[in-house]
Image 1 (cartoon, one colour):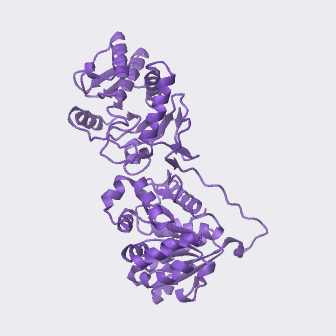
Image 2 (tube, one colour; image 1 turned 60 degrees about the horizontal axis):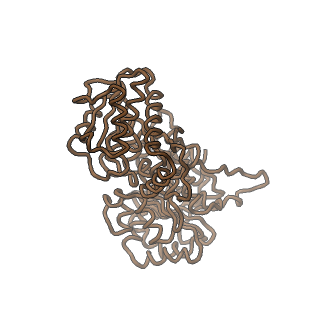
Image 3 (spheres, one colour; image 1 turned 135 degrees about the horizontal axis):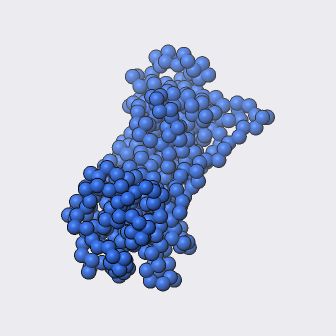
Amino acid sequence: MHQVAPDRSWPLFDVAATRRIEQAAQAALPPFTLMQRAGLATARLALAIAPHARRIWIACGPGNNGGDGLEAATHLAAWGKEAVVTLAGDPAALPADAKRAWERLRQAGLDLAPAPPHDCDLCIDALLGIGAARPLQGGLAAAAQAMAGVGRPVLAIDVPSGLHADTGAGLAVRATHTLALLTLKPGLFTAGGRDAAGQVWFDDLEVPAGPEAPCALLAGPPLAQPRLHASHKGSYGDVAVIGGAPGMAGAALLAASAALHAGAGRVYLAPLDPAAARLAPGLPELMLRDWSSLPLPSLAVACGCGGGTAVADVLPQVLPQAASLVLDADALNAVAAQADLQALLRARSQRSLPTVLTPHPLEAARLLGTSTPAVQADRLAAAQALAARYACVVVLKGSGTVIAAPGQPPAINPTGSARLATGGTGDVLAGWIAALLAHGLPAFEAGQAAVFRHGQLADRWPAGEPLVAGALAARAGG
């Protein structure tokens, strides 16, 4: 069993692949083996989470997830715990393995409780597993509500009940810990998954994935990029930030500051508001330019940060000329609205010009011609659709940011917190990615590395210090 931490990358498998892995294992092992292993692993983790617990409520559902809970209850009772077991369903209707777990529970002298306990030290959510895409209803919903009302730690088996294992969508049990079995599922790490799952643990039940390819990766820390002593500012590339329309100059300044602090050799700030220069007295390293004078074919460009509608007039020159390009915010809205800009964007891939789009869900919806709820319902699919449509790397921001590129599995970022939900942090990310492109990193690696470090900074931010975008930019690359 492993605690899933952002110290390495982890392969993620969707429900279909997990089912194939499970079926292959069941064909090779004696009946009931996997459920025995799952129940034992759950019971062991329960003791690790709450070693002094006396009463543990195991809320079981009508399928094999409930069978895992029944098996865990048998172990916990044998170890001297008061195991209070409820079942949302008829024991006679349980699947074969779950029915065997029920029989073992009865042989151990346990029976079902008529109702959830009024108090306990730990709850185990064994209501629904990966096979249930339906919302919690009836007795399942009542059990989930009771768990929420107890105010104790909740350990979910495989996935929190109600959570879609592939997408992270759905109203789910709010667990403090989740034990993923056989495989790690992508829905645990994006959309509502991170809030629902709490700390994720993983046990493969001694079953290898075999020939199954992961559908995505949970990103690990990027490789260090040491600087050679015999190097100079030209070794680390030039970045230009184009944006900052009247009233929004701060966005471009934040992106430029992030690029500077992330290690770009030189950073040009090309504000679309001529009066914006007065906002940068504290960053004398930035070089102010009119955007039309920039040597675009030699620059990594971050375009759109606070660009307003004015950025649409810049894009016909930037899209075909920039050596590498990050499109953010208003630049994305302009592309979504104009077919000619979309064609120029797609044409960049034919010339092998690295490009990264950094939409939030509403901007992604505009680029796809759909709705924000549709994007959030399947963030992996939305990011992959954007990458395929525009032939570039996509960083779909949000809880569990998704980094996607044509023809390869996407990555889900494990770092970051709600402290990033403040104005300007997206501009910081755009400038950071541009700096890594200027260093020469491929677009996918640049997006993944910047997103990871950006989130990691938020995770490590001092508790008593407000996280604001300007301070975040100043620590980029640190």
